[in-house]
Image 1 (spheres, rainbow over the protein chains, first blue to last red):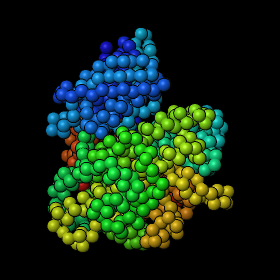
Image 2: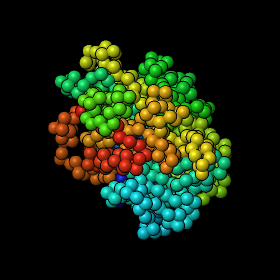
Image 3: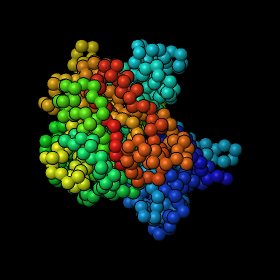
Image 4: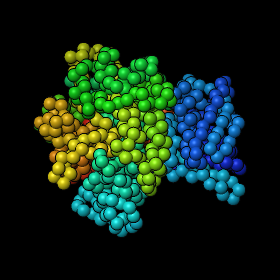
Length: 138
Length: 481
């Protein structure tokens, strides 16, 4: 199974993420987003951050989840490599993410993602597989 | 809903009638000629119609010729709402609050910099942080940020970045009143801490340009522009700070829309009644972000000026680099407009649209009151940018608004595919344009072909009379994020 693919949209950029479970699709959306910011290969697991997001709506939970990661990148330069979800429900996610601080000498800057949006957002179960479409503001 | 209902009003406008879509309270008007209409996305038309369903909308839901699909509101959208029955929507401003453009003049001619342009671009690229993961040269504590949010460009001037005379040549004096730093989340403060004085990425840029065509000699003269003169254009906004403010308030507004029972055709149109605490809080936070952006452009201008002096070995007087004007093109403002013959206060949302106030308007600085507000329209990195002036007709038709840029026609992905195997920097250099960019694929994404020709966009607003052409600027040096 492909974890994600890039969604072509005029102006900005998006992803379709897949997963056997909703949780897996959420994780793949996150790793997909990281890969848009920089090539994940030279990112090492040097540091761990803990994330907790809550939102009453399923769409809102996905947007909050990704925006939390955007925040950690934009404010502290943290780029994730491995995502371990500790709790996953319809309204709450807690996760442990290992990665490192973006270093322009070793990491190539690609897209500066500034927000995950509700635009054309889709979270759907199709033939036993979860699919997520999400568009980013860049 | 039916596209067949969309009709042409005249050579520069089409109308989306009220019966195009259920719930429309007013009609929609898009400024496009027949040529640009061919690139018009159906989804963008739909978005203009969606905005027309929002409570308290006044006049028409409008879009400028650089219209394209955005989130909720289209890019290039202009919508004004009544203060009593109307709403405020962060989606009508956009994520990059007070994304805008600043133009500097100089005493130099094209020939004066030709030999040094490569050095100049290199040093500018090093001096002005840009791209993914870049950090600003100014480190800000929480109190510094609060001062920026209250004072805008004035804060930068107080730090020695520029002169007090710059301030009057900035929309709203570089500081919009009513900003409240206490409404800003810790996250926004964290993102804003190291991003003051940075260019960002994507379509943001700094360009060294020259004046290659003048359409209105008298106005050009008043603005201090002459043929072959070197100018500098800066296009950036409130960076991660503004994005976080927008992200934070989209959540607030989604709850508010439910609370006030506002029916939304699209989640990104989330809004609240103007008089509600949610809307007032958003406006106070948005103003803070707008001020952050004005300080940002002021800092970048200052470092650009210093770089020119250093590289060319000129004194400030010899260089004569001063601000012509600075406009916001993602903002919501309370303004007075005439509605049915009566002067009325409205909240005007401009998302990818530029204010274009006419001669004599009290909000203009004295020096520009005789000619009208300078309007700055950046194009893509390979073609041109324009200086225009605001008009009375804009006041009558578009709440004093006009276009803001070229508008994309190709997705980033398409552009990257099209650029495969090509060296965009080399193609640009062959055209006499030196480019530097931080991002691996930025130049491919930002190549000329990915955009509409800004000249066509500007021609439509000129012919429609909502702003008039003064000068065309051609790039010779470009810095991208």
